[in-house]
Length: 105
Image (cartoon, one colour):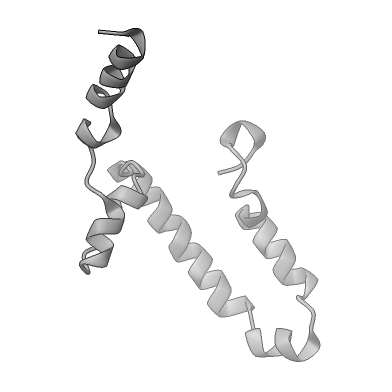
């Protein structure tokens, strides 16, 4: 067998068509009306301690928002009052995307 023929045979045996996928196809499932969220959001599950911490934070933040933020007034004034910005800063909202080593949450 010539080198060119042998190379062609090697390509045939290693073609992607013959390789098996390890994960199901998200798009194939989406076209059939099924969406497996684990394929597009493979985030780890939080521990029960983390869930409690998040729940506590969200309860306090929700309370702050309901008591302090008047969305209609903000829309009318086209300005967020400094008191609200200070409150958001106290909650650490402006640092949520920063890792803990940089004083984020």
